[in-house]
Image (cartoon, rainbow, N blue to C red; front, top):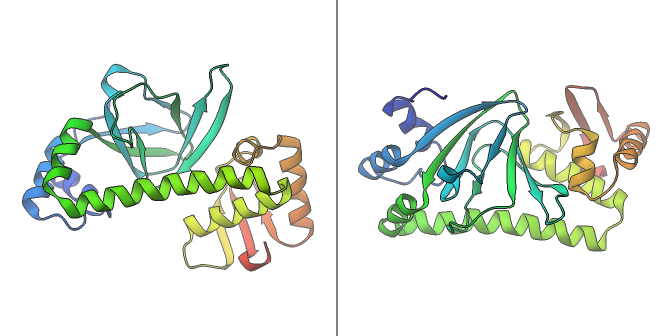
Length: 229
């Protein structure tokens, strides 16, 4: 069980999130009071089907998660990879069951969650925050929409290179040369994200290394020049 986090720690955790950065002290106090924090270690699963989580929205404070979607036949697909500041769970502010769960990919994560009813109450009193929330959700949905479009119209090599470029741009914004990333994704993870096979992805990594586009080991992935991907 995650120990209770002191109010001041909650305050600074949330104040640093772009969604809450413009709130005044009184509104921040309300946000802190309705927030719930938990930590999890690498490999742990965060389910959204548990009763207490069915009507909650989450934000990732620290670490990396992958969102895994389960279809009616029980097949699992990685839907998204989330990093600090990303929203997940009931992002549409609904309260129905979700056919997905989260897996911790970094050494540990810290997540913050709110009951939908409490979160909606704060949004109703803070129009600027409501607009910011809408933008964050829209950006995530647009990212997923683009990924699905790529699956339909691009070949697997193009999808692979585009995925690497987007990964680098998200983790190291503004950096275009000698971008070093933590290598927390397995070849199977990448295969699932670009709708390919592990064998094909392993071959693509090998070819990209031989072409001088990147280098990697068990812990890091370095891309020499994003413009060449």
